[in-house]
Length: 89
Image (tube, rainbow, N blue to C red; front, side, top):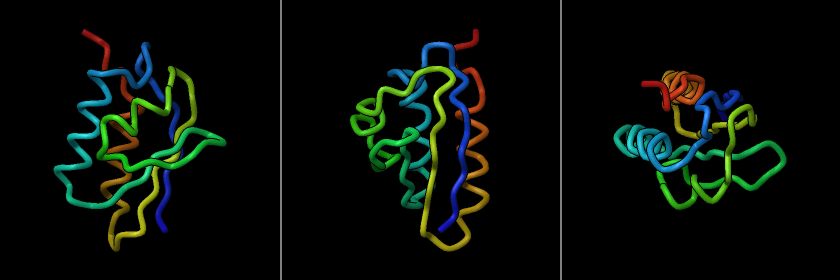
């Protein structure tokens, strides 16, 4: 299983706009990915409701995981996305 842990960078956390950008990137890839907040449950990273339900705030550590073969590049891209302030103008 491939995993990446990243600190959430968006100043307002993973709320509607950044969560939409993130879940769309996951869904577009067609690769099953799970996301979890440190010490919390894992949810389908392509599910906007699942992702928002985690209540991820700026500075929270999140883990991305996938059992799909060759998912390393995708997890790197998604980690970069979460490590970027998507609320910046």
